[in-house]
Amino acid sequence: MQKIIIDTNVFVSSLIQKGYSNYIVSEIFLTDDIEICISDELFEEYYDVLNRKRFSKYPDFVSSALSLLITIEKKAVKYFPSIKLHIISDKDDNKLLELAETSCADFLVTGNTNDFTMQEYKGTKIVTPKQYWEHYLHQ
Image (cartoon, rainbow, N blue to C red; front, side, top):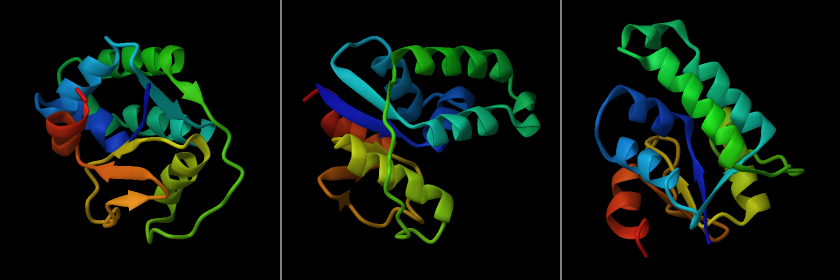
């Protein structure tokens, strides 16, 4: 089973526009071959970001975000990182690497190529939604 961590920006993109993020989110909830890894801290970020007022201007964003959060909570496997890292300059993003190390995730899917400049962290491949869709999803 493939273990993946999905950065919040991927979920936001999936709700705003059709594209790789949307394809991935649709696919991962249809298969049992992928484990979505979350932590309390990451799920809290999902909740906070997906409930921002600025996204309510997009049609059906609020109801779709609520449905997505419910699905994530049902399907994801929760991990409890006990390490604290200070690798990425945007300190909030370090929680993704902490989760990657704790869960031994295969992939971290993120659209944030400014902060995630490394291609791998302790065995977790760090990939864009396009890379994940084109190269790794159907392996």
